[in-house]
Image 1 (cartoon, rainbow, N blue to C red):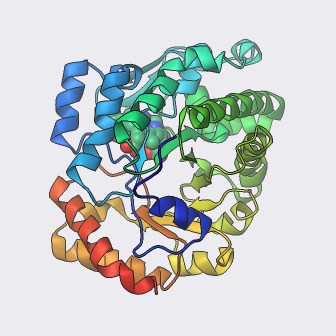
Image 2: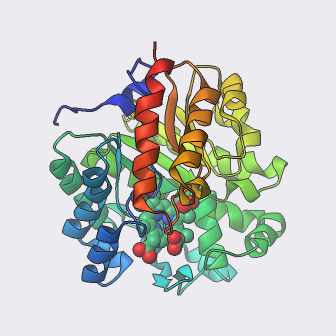
Length: 354
Ligand code: CP3
């Protein structure tokens, strides 16, 4: 294992002192970068980028080469690799996002759902992790990730994104037994998946609960949070208690007090929640990650500078803030606006680390 040259994110996850507020950007490798679009064209498709070790390594490093102020890298892959390995047939329709050829549409397909041979079926992911770690040569830590069981289930049952979630919610209310079966199988699969990513070299793992926020108040814990907790417990039991874990429920700011007891070291926060309010809830026991509205990056340097400073001011003096967006960067972002954001964070944040 190589020693990290920049371990600021790891220090912040442990609550240790850094000289500035570290940052990375959700979806930092992606379509807003012309070099990404060129590599994707070369590869032929997004899934080929994920499945080919050299391509996955190349695109993971692209944002780091362009923006030296990024303090972390994130594995180039997707949360939907797990349902793909379960045989649901992931594909991407241009302009429409992810789709499954065999979604879980009836009781018999749900009963048949089983934990895949993660090590074998997703070996391309672990190979990518190893290759990226080598290419990074200790520059910054590598974040591995997976989707939360609830969020994966929404895609598996609805068959695609962008729906109103009525199919899965109807199932959750009318057939809790089927819902539980899907969530349990997925929880076990994600646990093994993240364990193997850590084993291959991931320094941190993050669970994306992108659709936890659509759940009713009394359903969030039983249908989403509790399964994320089990994943964290499983990883700890497998000997990975020292690997920091981040959970991020988009639209989940009202449940931060519950997330704080999940066992994660850090919580993602979106732009609808104030960081200072969030900090009052988690005290300084957990690290907060967020929370710039990605839309601000479509504006201009002056507006971006103002918004970034407002977030740093809102968190205030302290060591437990990782700067990020409140959701993934949009494909329409001019790359120079990202540079402006990262420069603002580096220049303005040292006053909060005294
Ligand atoms: O952050 C990174 O740079 C790492 C890569 C990453 C991707 N997907 C690459 C990607 C990560 C962390 C994800 C997670 C992911 N994937 C989530 C959770 C985070 C979130 O955004 O809520 C979800 C819900 C997915 C499922 C998914 N994959 C969707 C809805 C889409 C289409 C979105 C879009 O922008 O069109 C994808 C495709 C995808 N995953 C792209 C990238 C770079 C765009 C693919 C392309 O056309 O090149």
